[in-house]
Length: 71
Image: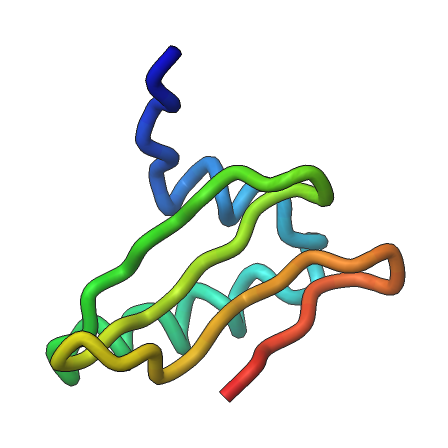
């Protein structure tokens, strides 16, 4: 069974409303810099990775306490 691709809008809807504007702004900046966005569905929600030249620059990870950015 193949997993469906998750869109950025689906990912953004899972983010708490008070953080959505920041997540969207940072996403736009990273995409402008040439990063590729890879979103995967995991047990705790979603994980989003920004990759530049096959290296991961940043991740969004969902935890019980909220969303975390790993740089």
